[in-house]
Image (cartoon, rainbow, N blue to C red; front, side, top):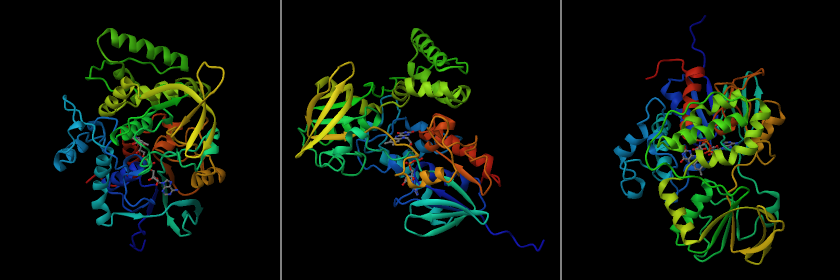
Length: 459
Ligand SMILES: Cc1cc2nc3c(=O)[nH]c(=O)nc-3n(C[C@H](O)[C@H](O)[C@H](O)COP(=O)(O)OP(=O)(O)OC[C@H]3O[C@@H](n4cnc5c(N)ncnc54)[C@H](O)[C@@H]3O)c2cc1C
């Protein structure tokens, strides 16, 4: 021993949205003794896909008191709101019972504000670049940037979020058409739409709700049709919290789970409680139940129950729910179970062949705008250069349901030689089942930090 301290390790986080920023914050709080470098092409850390929006119609869909970055300090975000007055100019954000649903831009500002002091102090570094390849070399990682630059790290963490949505084959013919909007969350995407435009939205989840709210806020009054295979759309939050203690046993099959849920909802309603409470209990036990199910049962669950789960678990922010309810009542919004069988871009409009569920033949309708809100793509699509290369090189594998990368309980990639590699956030869905929202991701990152990186007591 010559007394020389080993050189500090470098931990590279690839992706600086919510997950990447949250991890950097937790590492700093745990006194991680090395350099923390976040590779993120966006100008600001912490916002990612969900919180980069500047549209005032876009709100967080869980109440503010559930959106803390720190599971052991649930009041962190609500205190920040009170200290900064960040939603004082937004009376709609606060419900009569005190629950708050601020704009998503405000939530992005919260996360960014937490990371800013770490950046200023040189505790966290932000490299504005997209990484296209990860190669194990010399006991560490070589990270190849899409810009040709090469970086080194000792530990790598993948925090790249959901794969971007892809245009489904029946819509391929209108990619690039001026009346087709492939990503309504992109800034200014809806700007050219006339107030009386007749619109088709493909997908009926929360992004459809955001899109209707944005159009409504911008003065759109024309007819909107929103379609998905089952025509299910997100449910509202309960008017008040009346949660019971739903009692579930880990299920042996998808059928048993669905039976338990139906029985628990019936019992809750008979006791004057809410179905939302049943789903909240399920949500927190989702990982345990998912692990208990054999793979064919997991697949069955995804095939048959996914839309119902998504629409009951991920609920509408109350101001958005009010807009949807009004548009439905006015008949300027119709939500239907239907599929697109073909499209034809004609001049400035698009002809769409729509087959309603249960109908034999498709009918042609003409729309002034067609908007895609159909959700994320797949990790193994060649367009997702980094994840496709990680899969083809064998560094990562997809779980048996194709939902995400295989990883251990702390997000570590197991069963391989080489430098440490971790995955956090939505790309771990196949392992953790319900890992796409802030509370679950923050909990996962807290556990990962404690298990793998907490080398010194928290400051
Ligand atoms: C529209 C929307 C609204 C949501 N609203 C809520 C809500 O109200 N409440 C809630 O709890 N959850 C919400 N969620 C879910 C949740 O908050 C997000 O899934 C979460 O923010 C995921 O963060 P992330 O950092 O993993 O992914 P992302 O936000 O997608 O960030 C990933 C980042 O990685 C970067 N990246 C990708 N590939 C590379 C690469 N190769 N090299 C370098 N960087 C790369 C991207 O630029 C991006 O910034 C919402 C999600 C969406 C999409």
